[in-house]
Image (cartoon, rainbow, N blue to C red):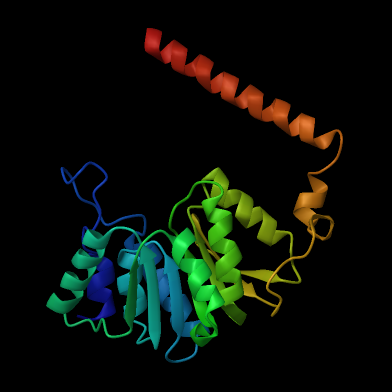
Length: 237
């Protein structure tokens, strides 16, 4: 199967209601096509790819004729559906290494093993809560080479948006390479594995201080209170 046929009609690999209904996941044909074109234009032949989360992104990456794709997700049944689709459509899964576990347990082992080298492309699209988004980034940043690309999916979620803002305030470390709406792609500009202490991180420093912290707390409290009031009004309606 060629990429266009796959991207125009991606398989329904996910169910959020115990199998009652199925969907293709968060990447639309537009996103899959945009990711593929970006990778073809910006990556060298035979890229090494790592992702937290799995699904049609995995199949998209396999169409790049990669040297390796490491995919991390705790759902073994999901990987069974991915590999079954690939085998049925003559998409090679030889480069694919699957880890049936949560990324917070897998990534430290990968980062600690020098045999893993460095990756050309990384996608963070696994667990979207705190602190997991930051945990994924910490280890993936150490695995991503200088000149590699980092994809952040679902920046409409506050947890991911905070990581997006943190990175955006580090222009010497990362540069925005593509804005695909809910998906942002950054180019890594440095070989440094960490950003340094809090006072060297522009975003953290800007939001820190005796007055700033309480102000942010009051704003968040007001937002949560307004949401509760709206829900009570809807419940009475």
